[in-house]
Amino acid sequence: MFQGATIDKFIRKAISPNKLFLPLLDPEIGIPLRSLVRPGDTVRRGQVVAEATDESALPLHAPVQGEVISMEPLVVPWAPEPVETIVILPGKEEPPQPPQPSKGPWEPTEIRELLYRLGVLSIKLKVGSEPIQTVVVNGCELEPFLTSTQRLMEERTKELISGMEILLQAFQAEQAILALTTDEDELIADLQDLVFVKKRISFVNLPPRYPQDNPQLLLRSLAPRTTATIVDVPTAIAAHEAIVNHLPLLDRVVTLSGPAIRNPQNLEARIGTLLSELIAQCDGFAQPPGLIIMGGPMRGQVISSLEIPIHRQSTGFVFFPRRLRSMEEPCIYCGKCIDACPQALYPVLISTAVKSLDWDAAESLRVRTCLLCGTCSYVCPSRIAHQRYLRRVLERRTTQ
Ligand code: SF4
Ligand code: SF4
Image 1 (tube, rainbow, N blue to C red):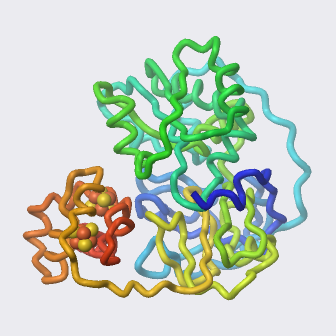
Image 2: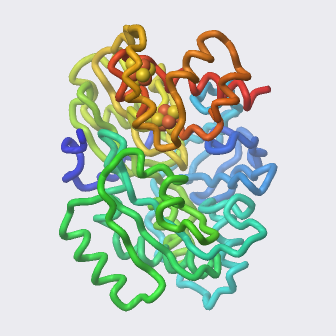
């Protein structure tokens, strides 16, 4: 759906950024980071510049060599307040380093430790008290317009499978499953060749049914009776780079697409590059953007600035020419939102409760099991913005 603009375009390396911005707050779980550098310091590419205050978050590495020119507050969409940010002025481009050969064989704890130190995988989040039996790699990409995961799977298939082997070892798991939704025969053939001799690695090509790419739903359908963990495709590839080539996570492939952008692309950008610099590499806008979404249109977040940096979880940005008015109409009690909800919730009742500020009623309707997938909003003929109401009650709960 709408993937056509970028699905067949090779990933392009973004040109070196003018400045890099590294906010001192983990974008995924909101844990603060502690800076290890000060304005005036020179940094090497790959040097740790900030450490996590808790091991659920990951350390930050300098994506380029250069100079720290300031520490300044930056408004970012993943924090309610401006976040103190390391600003790096890149120096001369370093020549590519030859890969450092692995010093394996590795113990699982050593692999996990190295993946953590190189900014790939959090120790605390991914290894609980129960041994992990199944590692699921989420290659399903069902958000309209986004294709960065699909392109990575097609262009870095070997690295992906190597990363899955490393994750198997790191978790001492019994099996690793790649879940994807693709109609690319060549990718399927490559995967078949690569996993043919690997007993514990498999892949499953699922029907492209949104919101099947939700991690909870995938784990429920693929690993229902095992202890399982899930990572995305960029993380599996980063695991390969970390263990095989000793490279920290410095880049991210992001899709820039949507009807307002002139030349939609998948760009491999240094973490910390401003979105505005990437738009220039897509030849700017064909029409002034009225609606910008970080992530996909279904689950993404509307943003109002182009001066925000790429972070290690960025997947893409979608640009529309104008903001669509919601023009909510009264509910006609068709029940479509209820039928469509993968969590068997009653979105119509939850939204009504939120509109009347009846938080207890919303809680009693199991709102906390909502995946914020947006399917209910999408199917509603009255254009009721359920997702907005759901987010309101969920955010209220987490900030209390
Ligand atoms: S966003 Fe809507 S459809 Fe999706 S889980 Fe929540 S209530 Fe159900
Ligand atoms: S889909 Fe919309 S109109 Fe239909 S019951 Fe749900 S809220 Fe009402």
